[in-house]
Image (cartoon, rainbow, N blue to C red; front, side):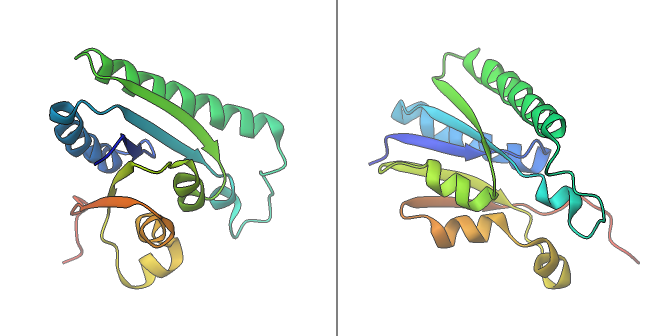
Length: 150
């Protein structure tokens, strides 16, 4: 059925909720889990006059932070004897996630369920992964815990 479970993480608690689902699937099936973090400096300077994307130092620091984050998650998951690997990719998140998959992979990710202008402005990585993926995608919609206006 599946050979590996891919879990894209952005460092947020929302994205990490996909880990519970991935573990629940991987454990009984004996599947390895592969964590992916995509760094993209473009959102940092979208709409700003400053162009951070040319800064090799900024790119290096972002990659180091992503690597350290994934290393921590991998170590935490391996404590229970799971087979877990990770990689940091650079570029558009949806494109890099789908490019990193192989036949037999299952991508497990979360979606914030944003709508309206927020979704239009920010886009939806989850939606783009579903559109671009040639394989299986399990999307878990989570509700935001952000307060709403009254």
